[in-house]
Image 1 (cartoon, rainbow, N blue to C red):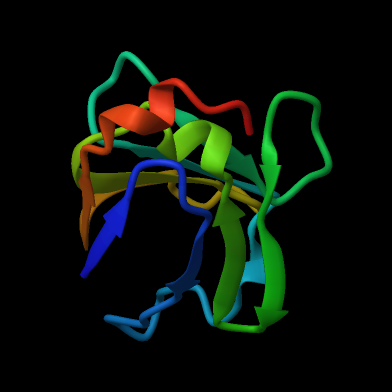
Image 2 (cartoon, rainbow, N blue to C red):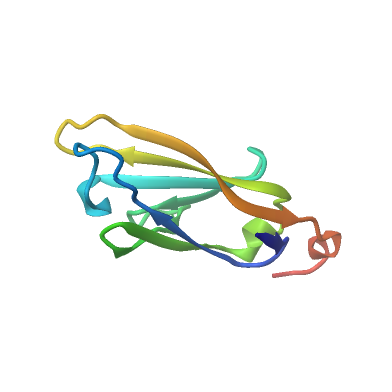
Length: 117
């Protein structure tokens, strides 16, 4: 999927149960953090808790988190978009860190550097 610099990008993160011991719902986690980036020099950070410096991850169903990468972030991104997800465990579970390629490619739009969003 192609997006351009300076666009808002809506996303959904789906919880996929791979084994019987896996989480059944996002609400089982103490906290979830997601980092979206094309290069590590600019990262759009999201959290399931209301925290300063983080966008909101909203639990829209037991198995889906949603959010929006704002144009101020995508304006300085270019290339394949990746997401790292860190799930803070509850009840002594093992922490989980995963990296995924989102299938989104942000196309460079140099004129966006000139515009004020």
